[in-house]
Amino acid sequence: MKRKNLLVLSIAILFILSLGLISGAAASPNTIVYVSPPKIFDPTLIPGTQFSVDIVVENVEGLRGYQFEMSFNPEVLHGASVEVGPFLGSAGGTVFELEGLGFDNEAGKLPLTGALLWENDPAYCPNGNGVLATVTFEVVGYGGSSLKFGPNTGLQGCDGTWILHGLENVENGYFANQEVHDVKIASITCDPYGVYQGDPVFITVIVDNEGTFTESFDVTVFVERWATGEEFFIDRQAVEELLSGASITLSFVWDTTDFPYGTYYVYAEASVVPGELGETENNILDTTFGGISAPVAESTWIDLFLHWATLAMKVVPVAAVAMVGIVIFKSLMSVKRRWPIRWHHK
Image (cartoon, rainbow, N blue to C red; front, side, top):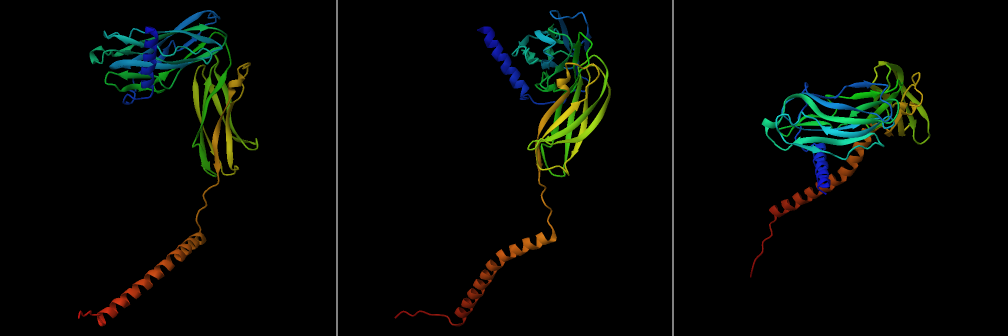
């Protein structure tokens, strides 16, 4: 029961930190968090064996706590354990481990985990470089897997601000026990979500090389109209020599001038690289685009004339009645001044 209560407390603290209720601060350009070693290629790590990587921080000042989340390929790796490293308590502070929910090996996720110092005292908050945590994986298959930080990764300072929060200043890791070819569309986003016909849509595509070879390939963006299933080509870009374990962000612009109104699916597809056998299902990814609407017509001089004419027709009768009322009122007042009525009491 005590362990359960501690787990609930850990999750609650991590949830509060992930919401950003601690006042924000920009990451120091010199502070980084990374996986060490950054790349592991070892054919002897066959299914049933284990290996560990360290989560390392460099150039940090006044660290009170850390949190991170991570994703991996569940067909190749399963998470085994996470242990707090020596750095956080190196200035003599008492370290409280925030265990989180543990590994989700079906989804290939390590949800938010971390550690925090009980003492809110700069004397106990370490500076410099060191190991925050050690993550151990069990190998369950052959192939490659990125070890990618999630967006709630962060470092908390003794003053309660974020030293680092998000994917800026973090460096992912990569594991492989077999030479594989595997490129992957990691994400696709549209900005804005909906437009008037003729407005541009800015499409961002992130591509990962999850294989063990440097790859060159094409990325094509196309759309499908939801109502009819019609497909329209948008653009194609070449990716040259993307290193193993690396990512690249591509930008596309969709000119909607000649496209019918309606909702669309937007697709990004990476061409299959030689030797990419069973991994091609992740070469394509789609997102729903809110839609193209009819543009707002610009007003012509005829529209303006009709608008003012209509307004005048509404205003003139009211003004005329008001003018007549004023004339009658003034006339009555004039008569009163000329022939005043006097009342006499008998």
